[in-house]
Length: 388
Length: 251
Image 1 (spheres, each protein chain N blue to C red):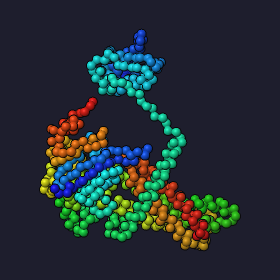
Image 2 (cartoon, chains in turn orange, red):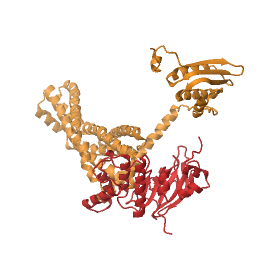
Image 3 (cartoon, rainbow over the protein chains, first blue to last red):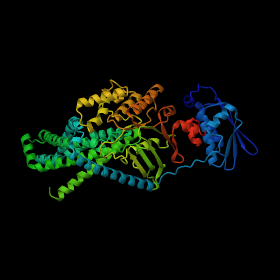
Image 4 (cartoon, rainbow over the protein chains, first blue to last red):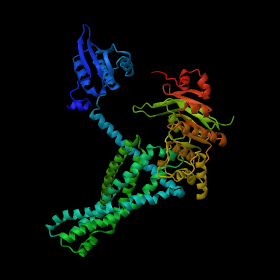
């Protein structure tokens, strides 16, 4: 059995059910189809007919003689009608001729008996235009996020005036899901960050006999930069994506519209509790991350640099001030707002079913990571400029 | 004559198009809905029936024209409690809440009723729509018809005078569809509820709607207003007669 036979479900060796021949006439070509034209053989029919009409030129005329066709199915007819309109696009007139009543009905159903229309081929968009469209899209999205942030601030002010109208019930479960449930991964990642950094730093510092300064390196970079940033990235991947997907599926199933028509502002009801929950848990997780990051460094210092636990910790204490930890926590609050606001905005902007939810969730994570890095860089420059 | 429940004047629906020119869905729609009537919005697929409903309830801002609901102007969903209930096509029940919590949500938000009173009202509403015993079930556990009835109960939670229903009987079996029609008629007759519904179901329209408008996609306008039975038998417009008599216009 050949591959073509397997594809067409035709038993091996059995001849094709249809026959295609060309008879040149004085004023036209005649393509004669006969036998059974079935979808299982559509591939071969397509190749065969395409090859036979390939040489036709503008002004030629061809008839598809259907008089000896015993049976034809819808799929094959659709292909023939398509080839006819391809011919029309090349300026060749092609018509179905001599069809019996059954076949004619099928020709009519697939619109093979009306004037073949030329399909307008869509030209591929130029690189320049794609670039322009993406730029406009970027600013459009940015405007959407900033507008949403503004509305969230207004809603928060409204909530402060009337605390009774808040959706406080959602706060504790969201804190549990975003905070307590994230503890294992936060611990693992931050431990490894401190551990790896100590290893990399140690090889350099050993050359100068400055082993003990590994504690300074790890302590400062974890508390000021990596602890807050890594923890925020974890939260963005866990909770940010969850928020975007949750609100996205609520959007596509009209639940957000339903909330609005019931007089619940979706920002007040859905976004503020999530944002507040993240603002409360992210600093706590960051503090935990700082701690285990330092422990990660400590493990390397003690096991491979010959430092004592006491020596490492007292060096860390000397190097890291309260402000170093505190500045990381300030950042983490801003990170929390960015994660929640972007995720909720993307979720609520979702249209277009399940695929839309997936697309917006991806967009939410990508935009948030971008925002986190920008905010982090902004903070670093700000703290540096003011010698903080 | 008392003031109409809904007054729409010169409403233009659409959205800004890519090339600056707006894409218009319906132009200059004018109609009103009297208090206590069942009013149907009809038309072929894609003519903007469900979209018109979104404008009426304040989910979209019109390109032009005026909408007044209960003499209050265009509904502002950002401020206070809307004076109507809405049932969306899919039901749009909140999947994370039970049916009872779905119905009780607006009562908790907009009234000072104690928990027991809210629970009692929820049970009464469920009984009204024939869903006794479903209060602790989640929307995912309900059939399509039950979801729609639960959504009507939710829309009725705050005793509104006006309720909007988007395709209430679409996708239901004939018996459930008739039951739903009965429910709508009962709510209309007994409670004096004004009902605005978008639907395709002709038998249901003839049975329950006192008046209707028919939107047309090509002319982007309202092509008929009046009693559906009257329009079916005596309309001058062949498009309207064909629609009501289920005659395909061209094949």
